[in-house]
Image (cartoon, rainbow, N blue to C red; front, side):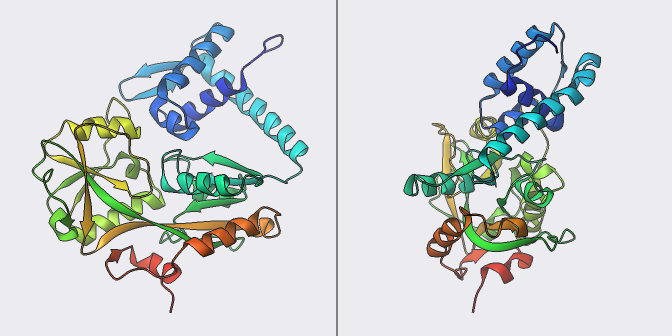
Length: 320
Protein backbone atom coordinates (compact mmCIF):
# COMPACT_ATOMS: atom_id res chain seq x y z
CA UNK A 1 0.00 0.00 0.00
CA UNK A 2 3.07 2.25 0.02
CA UNK A 3 2.56 5.37 -2.07
CA UNK A 4 -1.21 4.88 -2.41
CA UNK A 5 -3.54 7.54 -1.06
CA UNK A 6 -6.33 5.18 -0.07
CA UNK A 7 -9.84 6.52 0.49
CA UNK A 8 -10.84 5.52 4.04
CA UNK A 9 -14.51 5.45 3.05
CA UNK A 10 -13.70 2.93 0.32
CA UNK A 11 -11.58 0.84 2.69
CA UNK A 12 -14.39 0.86 5.27
CA UNK A 13 -16.89 -0.17 2.58
CA UNK A 14 -14.65 -3.10 1.63
CA UNK A 15 -14.50 -4.32 5.25
CA UNK A 16 -18.24 -3.96 5.81
CA UNK A 17 -19.06 -5.83 2.56
CA UNK A 18 -16.76 -8.64 3.67
CA UNK A 19 -18.52 -8.79 7.06
CA UNK A 20 -22.08 -8.56 5.67
CA UNK A 21 -21.69 -10.66 2.50
CA UNK A 22 -23.82 -8.30 0.38
CA UNK A 23 -23.44 -4.86 -1.13
CA UNK A 24 -27.04 -4.05 -0.13
CA UNK A 25 -26.49 -4.98 3.51
CA UNK A 26 -23.25 -3.03 3.58
CA UNK A 27 -25.09 0.02 2.22
CA UNK A 28 -27.61 -0.24 5.06
CA UNK A 29 -24.84 -0.45 7.66
CA UNK A 30 -22.97 2.50 6.17
CA UNK A 31 -26.11 4.59 5.71
CA UNK A 32 -25.48 5.21 1.99
CA UNK A 33 -26.92 3.94 -1.28
CA UNK A 34 -25.83 0.65 -2.81
CA UNK A 35 -24.62 2.63 -5.83
CA UNK A 36 -22.33 4.67 -3.58
CA UNK A 37 -20.88 1.48 -2.10
CA UNK A 38 -20.26 0.07 -5.58
CA UNK A 39 -18.47 3.26 -6.64
CA UNK A 40 -16.23 3.14 -3.56
CA UNK A 41 -15.23 -0.45 -4.28
CA UNK A 42 -14.63 0.30 -7.96
CA UNK A 43 -12.34 3.17 -6.93
CA UNK A 44 -10.44 0.98 -4.46
CA UNK A 45 -10.09 -1.85 -6.98
CA UNK A 46 -8.80 0.67 -9.51
CA UNK A 47 -6.19 1.95 -7.09
CA UNK A 48 -5.05 -1.56 -6.18
CA UNK A 49 -5.25 -2.91 -9.71
CA UNK A 50 -7.04 -6.02 -8.44
CA UNK A 51 -10.58 -7.28 -8.05
CA UNK A 52 -11.50 -7.59 -4.39
CA UNK A 53 -14.85 -9.38 -4.70
CA UNK A 54 -16.46 -12.06 -6.83
CA UNK A 55 -20.10 -11.10 -7.48
CA UNK A 56 -22.58 -13.96 -7.05
CA UNK A 57 -26.36 -14.16 -7.09
CA UNK A 58 -27.47 -12.63 -3.80
CA UNK A 59 -23.99 -12.44 -2.28
CA UNK A 60 -20.33 -11.66 -2.81
CA UNK A 61 -17.11 -13.42 -1.85
CA UNK A 62 -13.56 -12.18 -1.45
CA UNK A 63 -11.11 -12.94 -4.22
CA UNK A 64 -7.67 -14.21 -3.27
CA UNK A 65 -6.38 -10.64 -3.57
CA UNK A 66 -9.29 -9.37 -1.44
CA UNK A 67 -8.57 -11.94 1.27
CA UNK A 68 -4.92 -10.82 1.40
CA UNK A 69 -5.91 -7.15 1.55
CA UNK A 70 -8.62 -7.52 4.23
CA UNK A 71 -6.43 -7.74 7.36
CA UNK A 72 -4.46 -4.70 6.21
CA UNK A 73 -7.73 -2.84 5.58
CA UNK A 74 -8.88 -3.61 9.12
CA UNK A 75 -5.54 -2.38 10.46
CA UNK A 76 -5.83 0.88 8.50
CA UNK A 77 -9.32 1.51 9.88
CA UNK A 78 -8.30 0.63 13.44
CA UNK A 79 -5.41 3.09 13.26
CA UNK A 80 -7.65 5.82 11.85
CA UNK A 81 -10.32 5.24 14.51
CA UNK A 82 -7.68 5.30 17.26
CA UNK A 83 -6.31 8.57 15.92
CA UNK A 84 -9.76 10.17 15.90
CA UNK A 85 -10.47 8.92 19.44
CA UNK A 86 -7.20 10.38 20.67
CA UNK A 87 -8.07 13.80 19.26
CA UNK A 88 -11.64 13.76 20.59
CA UNK A 89 -10.45 12.69 24.05
CA UNK A 90 -13.73 10.83 24.63
CA UNK A 91 -15.83 14.00 24.60
CA UNK A 92 -18.00 12.66 21.80
CA UNK A 93 -20.73 10.19 22.80
CA UNK A 94 -20.73 7.26 20.38
CA UNK A 95 -24.30 6.04 19.85
CA UNK A 96 -25.20 2.92 17.87
CA UNK A 97 -28.54 2.76 16.06
CA UNK A 98 -30.20 0.09 13.92
CA UNK A 99 -29.85 1.96 10.63
CA UNK A 100 -30.28 5.33 8.97
CA UNK A 101 -34.04 4.92 8.38
CA UNK A 102 -35.02 3.19 11.62
CA UNK A 103 -36.87 4.87 14.49
CA UNK A 104 -33.86 5.18 16.79
CA UNK A 105 -31.86 7.08 14.15
CA UNK A 106 -34.83 9.41 13.60
CA UNK A 107 -35.17 9.89 17.36
CA UNK A 108 -31.48 10.83 17.60
CA UNK A 109 -31.73 13.25 14.68
CA UNK A 110 -34.62 14.97 16.48
CA UNK A 111 -32.56 15.09 19.67
CA UNK A 112 -29.60 16.64 17.87
CA UNK A 113 -31.81 19.25 16.23
CA UNK A 114 -33.07 20.26 19.67
CA UNK A 115 -29.58 20.05 21.21
CA UNK A 116 -27.23 21.51 18.58
CA UNK A 117 -24.46 21.76 21.16
CA UNK A 118 -24.45 17.99 21.74
CA UNK A 119 -21.28 16.15 20.73
CA UNK A 120 -22.63 12.87 19.43
CA UNK A 121 -21.47 10.44 16.75
CA UNK A 122 -24.10 8.10 15.31
CA UNK A 123 -22.91 4.68 14.16
CA UNK A 124 -25.23 2.76 11.84
CA UNK A 125 -25.44 -0.95 12.50
CA UNK A 126 -27.12 -3.69 10.45
CA UNK A 127 -28.91 -7.04 10.76
CA UNK A 128 -25.75 -9.07 11.31
CA UNK A 129 -23.70 -6.44 13.15
CA UNK A 130 -26.21 -5.21 15.69
CA UNK A 131 -26.22 -2.16 17.92
CA UNK A 132 -26.69 -4.46 20.93
CA UNK A 133 -23.43 -6.22 20.19
CA UNK A 134 -21.67 -2.92 19.51
CA UNK A 135 -22.26 -1.64 23.04
CA UNK A 136 -21.48 -5.00 24.65
CA UNK A 137 -18.17 -5.20 22.76
CA UNK A 138 -17.22 -1.62 23.61
CA UNK A 139 -17.32 -0.22 20.08
CA UNK A 140 -19.78 2.45 21.27
CA UNK A 141 -20.70 4.12 24.54
CA UNK A 142 -24.46 3.56 24.29
CA UNK A 143 -26.85 1.90 21.86
CA UNK A 144 -30.52 1.69 21.03
CA UNK A 145 -31.47 -1.96 20.97
CA UNK A 146 -33.81 -4.55 22.36
CA UNK A 147 -32.45 -5.33 25.82
CA UNK A 148 -34.16 -8.62 26.71
CA UNK A 149 -33.14 -11.39 24.34
CA UNK A 150 -33.76 -14.70 26.13
CA UNK A 151 -30.65 -16.83 26.29
CA UNK A 152 -28.44 -13.79 25.72
CA UNK A 153 -28.58 -11.71 28.92
CA UNK A 154 -26.81 -8.38 29.03
CA UNK A 155 -23.44 -8.55 30.79
CA UNK A 156 -23.08 -6.81 34.13
CA UNK A 157 -21.28 -3.83 32.61
CA UNK A 158 -24.32 -2.90 30.44
CA UNK A 159 -27.57 -1.51 31.84
CA UNK A 160 -30.86 -0.76 30.07
CA UNK A 161 -33.37 2.09 30.19
CA UNK A 162 -36.71 2.16 28.32
CA UNK A 163 -36.42 4.48 25.32
CA UNK A 164 -39.10 4.05 22.65
CA UNK A 165 -41.84 1.66 21.53
CA UNK A 166 -41.93 1.58 17.73
CA UNK A 167 -45.51 0.60 16.79
CA UNK A 168 -45.56 -1.62 13.71
CA UNK A 169 -47.84 -1.02 10.73
CA UNK A 170 -48.59 -3.52 7.99
CA UNK A 171 -47.23 -2.59 4.55
CA UNK A 172 -48.99 -4.12 1.55
CA UNK A 173 -49.09 -3.56 -2.21
CA UNK A 174 -52.15 -2.07 -3.89
CA UNK A 175 -52.94 -5.49 -5.34
CA UNK A 176 -53.09 -7.19 -1.94
CA UNK A 177 -56.55 -8.16 -0.59
CA UNK A 178 -55.96 -5.99 2.51
CA UNK A 179 -55.00 -2.88 0.56
CA UNK A 180 -58.41 -1.23 1.02
CA UNK A 181 -58.55 -1.71 4.80
CA UNK A 182 -58.10 1.22 7.20
CA UNK A 183 -56.88 -1.12 9.96
CA UNK A 184 -56.35 -4.82 10.59
CA UNK A 185 -56.53 -6.82 13.82
CA UNK A 186 -53.40 -8.62 14.99
CA UNK A 187 -55.28 -11.94 14.92
CA UNK A 188 -56.09 -11.35 11.23
CA UNK A 189 -52.41 -11.69 10.38
CA UNK A 190 -52.77 -15.44 10.89
CA UNK A 191 -52.10 -17.11 7.55
CA UNK A 192 -50.29 -14.13 5.99
CA UNK A 193 -46.65 -14.26 4.93
CA UNK A 194 -44.50 -11.27 5.91
CA UNK A 195 -41.16 -10.85 4.16
CA UNK A 196 -38.70 -9.59 6.79
CA UNK A 197 -35.21 -10.61 5.59
CA UNK A 198 -33.54 -8.62 8.36
CA UNK A 199 -35.01 -11.14 10.84
CA UNK A 200 -33.05 -13.94 9.22
CA UNK A 201 -30.02 -13.43 11.46
CA UNK A 202 -29.38 -14.80 14.94
CA UNK A 203 -30.24 -11.57 16.72
CA UNK A 204 -32.70 -9.93 19.09
CA UNK A 205 -34.62 -8.69 16.02
CA UNK A 206 -34.97 -12.24 14.73
CA UNK A 207 -36.19 -13.37 18.15
CA UNK A 208 -38.77 -10.54 18.20
CA UNK A 209 -40.33 -11.65 14.91
CA UNK A 210 -40.28 -15.31 15.94
CA UNK A 211 -42.29 -14.39 19.03
CA UNK A 212 -44.65 -12.22 16.98
CA UNK A 213 -45.23 -15.17 14.65
CA UNK A 214 -45.96 -17.46 17.59
CA UNK A 215 -48.40 -14.90 19.01
CA UNK A 216 -50.52 -14.16 15.95
CA UNK A 217 -49.76 -16.88 13.40
CA UNK A 218 -48.12 -14.70 10.72
CA UNK A 219 -45.41 -16.53 8.78
CA UNK A 220 -42.10 -14.67 8.75
CA UNK A 221 -40.20 -15.20 5.50
CA UNK A 222 -36.53 -14.30 6.03
CA UNK A 223 -35.15 -15.43 2.67
CA UNK A 224 -32.63 -13.08 1.09
CA UNK A 225 -33.73 -11.91 -2.34
CA UNK A 226 -31.14 -11.68 -5.16
CA UNK A 227 -31.90 -7.95 -5.46
CA UNK A 228 -30.81 -7.38 -1.84
CA UNK A 229 -32.60 -6.69 1.44
CA UNK A 230 -32.31 -2.92 1.67
CA UNK A 231 -35.55 -1.23 2.75
CA UNK A 232 -36.17 0.19 -0.73
CA UNK A 233 -35.75 -3.28 -2.27
CA UNK A 234 -38.19 -4.75 0.27
CA UNK A 235 -40.76 -2.07 -0.57
CA UNK A 236 -40.35 -2.69 -4.31
CA UNK A 237 -41.03 -6.40 -3.88
CA UNK A 238 -44.01 -5.90 -1.56
CA UNK A 239 -45.51 -3.28 -3.90
CA UNK A 240 -45.59 -5.80 -6.73
CA UNK A 241 -46.95 -8.72 -4.70
CA UNK A 242 -50.56 -9.73 -4.09
CA UNK A 243 -49.56 -12.17 -1.34
CA UNK A 244 -46.55 -10.87 0.59
CA UNK A 245 -46.68 -8.19 3.30
CA UNK A 246 -44.05 -6.62 5.53
CA UNK A 247 -43.88 -4.38 8.59
CA UNK A 248 -42.87 -0.74 8.98
CA UNK A 249 -42.36 1.02 12.28
CA UNK A 250 -44.38 4.14 13.06
CA UNK A 251 -41.14 5.99 13.79
CA UNK A 252 -39.27 4.46 10.87
CA UNK A 253 -38.85 6.26 7.55
CA UNK A 254 -40.47 4.04 4.92
CA UNK A 255 -39.30 4.68 1.35
CA UNK A 256 -42.18 6.21 -0.60
CA UNK A 257 -43.80 4.05 -3.27
CA UNK A 258 -47.03 4.78 -5.17
CA UNK A 259 -48.20 1.17 -4.83
CA UNK A 260 -47.67 0.72 -1.09
CA UNK A 261 -50.40 1.05 1.52
CA UNK A 262 -49.65 1.43 5.24
CA UNK A 263 -52.29 -0.18 7.48
CA UNK A 264 -52.39 0.21 11.30
CA UNK A 265 -52.43 -3.06 13.25
CA UNK A 266 -54.76 -3.03 16.26
CA UNK A 267 -56.13 -5.15 19.13
CA UNK A 268 -53.27 -5.10 20.11
CA UNK A 269 -50.68 -3.10 18.16
CA UNK A 270 -47.30 -4.88 17.99
CA UNK A 271 -44.38 -2.65 18.94
CA UNK A 272 -40.62 -3.11 18.82
CA UNK A 273 -39.14 -2.26 22.25
CA UNK A 274 -36.17 0.08 21.94
CA UNK A 275 -34.03 0.42 25.06
CA UNK A 276 -31.00 2.61 25.65
CA UNK A 277 -28.12 0.32 26.58
CA UNK A 278 -25.32 2.02 28.50
CA UNK A 279 -21.84 0.78 29.36
CA UNK A 280 -20.77 1.26 32.98
CA UNK A 281 -17.62 3.02 31.77
CA UNK A 282 -19.82 5.63 30.06
CA UNK A 283 -21.94 6.43 33.13
CA UNK A 284 -20.14 9.72 33.76
CA UNK A 285 -19.80 10.72 30.10
CA UNK A 286 -20.51 14.48 29.85
CA UNK A 287 -22.93 13.97 26.95
CA UNK A 288 -25.00 11.15 28.43
CA UNK A 289 -27.14 12.76 31.13
CA UNK A 290 -28.81 15.14 28.67
CA UNK A 291 -29.77 12.25 26.39
CA UNK A 292 -31.14 10.21 29.31
CA UNK A 293 -33.21 13.18 30.50
CA UNK A 294 -34.60 13.65 27.00
CA UNK A 295 -35.66 9.99 26.77
CA UNK A 296 -37.20 10.06 30.25
CA UNK A 297 -39.28 13.10 29.30
CA UNK A 298 -40.42 11.67 25.96
CA UNK A 299 -41.15 8.10 27.03
CA UNK A 300 -44.60 7.68 28.62
CA UNK A 301 -43.39 5.00 31.01
CA UNK A 302 -46.20 2.48 30.56
CA UNK A 303 -47.36 0.23 27.74
CA UNK A 304 -50.93 1.02 26.64
CA UNK A 305 -53.33 -1.89 27.01
CA UNK A 306 -53.69 -2.14 23.23
CA UNK A 307 -49.94 -2.67 22.60
CA UNK A 308 -48.14 -6.03 22.30
CA UNK A 309 -44.45 -6.53 23.07
CA UNK A 310 -42.70 -9.83 23.82
CA UNK A 311 -43.15 -11.04 27.38
CA UNK A 312 -39.43 -10.84 28.26
CA UNK A 313 -39.46 -7.07 27.51
CA UNK A 314 -42.44 -6.11 29.62
CA UNK A 315 -40.60 -5.78 32.94
CA UNK A 316 -38.46 -2.98 31.50
CA UNK A 317 -41.28 -1.12 29.78
CA UNK A 318 -44.21 -1.54 32.17
CA UNK A 319 -44.10 0.36 35.44
CA UNK A 320 -46.40 0.36 38.40
